[in-house]
Length: 159
Image (cartoon, rainbow, N blue to C red; front, side):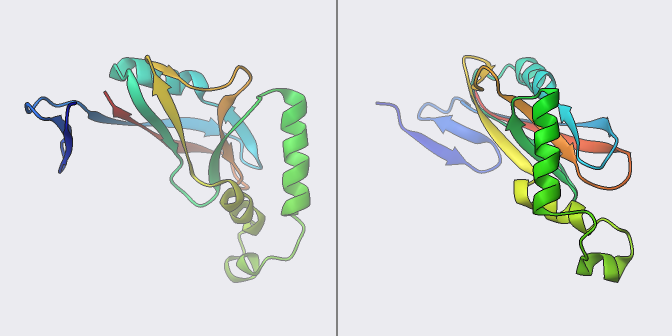
């Protein structure tokens, strides 16, 4: 039985001193239209995992900012409509938000919607492949009220 120990800033080291883990990070920009716009990043994440040479571990997708989110979904137009309707029911744009009264930027609903989903998602990787279901895609959502180039951070951890 091999013993492993966690080495500070390096990764997992085997008993004979061999480095057994890696961490790779990449930041990309994606164009979004705001207002709940969904962008499928599954192929980009899979390409990142492949380029890193990750065979076993995890891939994380993170959206810096308070009005972006990441989740998985069956990415198709009707479900995209259903999702937008649900977000409108949970956090209606026309509702009065204390955030809007303070900042006058009209995106209080954007912050609430993003916080419901969260800014990151981690997917296991086995044999170099993301362990997603057949109809499961990784999507980034931009809930803010303006179009932008949104930064997305990919990180691979493992071997």
